[in-house]
Length: 288
Image 1 (cartoon, rainbow, N blue to C red):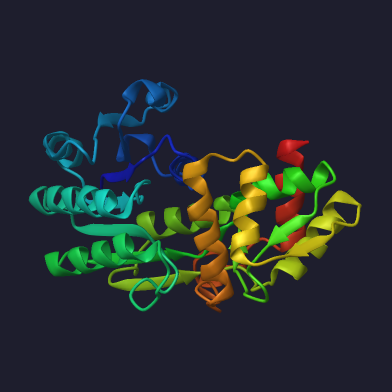
Image 2 (cartoon, helix red, strand yellow):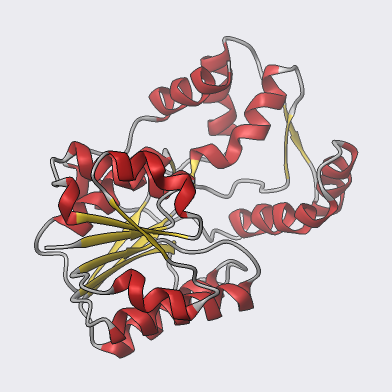
């Protein structure tokens, strides 16, 4: 049986591949599809087959997906409309290659949510379902690593700035999401399933209290409106293009888009997501 992971040199994809190898998936059963094969030479040296596959170049995907039984399609980055086309290209190629199973990394509550990031995920889930290929949608809540810059700022003495009010988020480590994806790709009984993968729901105040404990210091919380939040991010010299994205994330959290309670991590991992205190120790350790 041949399994393929797209985006295997990315932050999540690389962790998925490592998780598969740790699960004793034979390297000769594992294939990766990447835009730049040179970045995957380390995997090739370990016996993993490396193929060139670019969602923007559909002609590369037929060869990339040829002979593949089970596919993990990791969502692309970028503007919504571009991502929708990229994902359609990949799904069409999987259908042509007669792939037998597609796992896809989606977003929390993809079909019903009004979150601004949802359209590509909603469209992709719908396209996959229309193929009739058995699927599993891994609806990832939010990566703890997404808060890296805020944690670094707190380490330097800055307050935690938020306009999310009391909205809750199910933060979890990318590693937990990766292990869950590896289980679905290599395991049995996951056909036509949806997993809402979420850590323990927490507010910004609860997260910051945990960050303070991890840093052994008090981290003040500065609650502002969206406009003030944007101004503070600009003053921190963040790139102009990313400010609307960050504001919209705060708005989505405030409106409950990520407040999805679930025990699906436990179903896949045999345990809940890594506790927040342990997760933060990992994050702080990586940036200290």
